[in-house]
Image 1 (cartoon, rainbow, N blue to C red):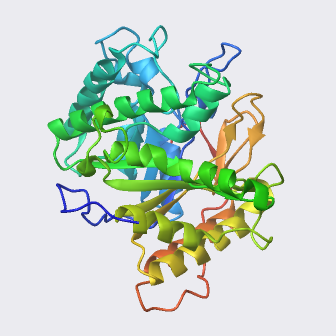
Image 2 (image 1 turned 135 degrees about the vertical axis):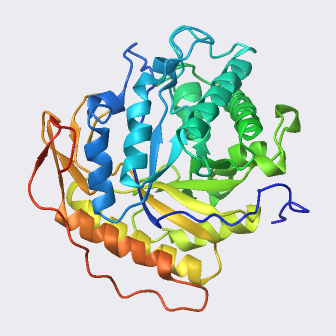
Length: 407
């Protein structure tokens, strides 16, 4: 696969994060097909307990995170911005010494916004510009942004299957193009305010194995669709959308246990015939784009979490040893969160929460797995993969969100 030609802007600049092991706070804000607005940040009380949450995250050795600006709360009226919903998160992260890749749009548009309006990209660009100014006023670090989270998944879930807004069916390709327009407009606006801005474009990586010779071609076509969003952002596909090589800055890959399956058949887990090792997927992504890579989401619920993270760590160490510039890996979510459709309490990540979300504490087994994951970032080309790592000191006991502080 050919890479782009001459380097442009920061498109190939190495990415140095504060920690290889990262943690993300679930930030989904979509409107479901039932009409109900999901707000995972409010549901987990992360907005009210941001100081505590970031202190706990930092206590596990994590110094890089993912979090989000909730567009629907900030811009209730076009062109008028209320930052009160996000400033506590911005300041809590800074206080804890954690840098953040900020989502600008995590599946959620403002109430009343027409998703198909040609004016929407301009409105989103203005929002991005205002958000960039806010972050510049709050600190002088290099800003990290994810303009539109999971373009490919949103195109499928919102444009093809109608599960959440825009709740369309059979229009996945149309919605993907519109999301790319949003992303391109916001990316340019962010760089207008601060040319140092790094743009992390997060989308799932998948593998689809053919069930037989008859469906080999269609399985491969579906698998290759995972590259469409990145190709459009880079201007390789449908250049009328405004994409350009310098806009595809950092490739963010999301990888979960259910990201591989047999075409028309069951899921593929590690060790099963047909399963593709993550290291091979990352080599393909890097060969195609030549960009820094961040695993922007990975993890598994409950007791599966530690072993899954350790397995991912082994794959990342091997990928880095083979020359793939993986700059970090984000445990996502890093804290329990309420399920999108049923509000069930999802146990995941190193930070556990009580059923009523009033208390938080560190899960020792998950914190140890995060420590092991961090060792993958120590592997350099030519170095052997790590055997494992001793866990760091883990705070004991539960901490209440009432005071909002880990003291």
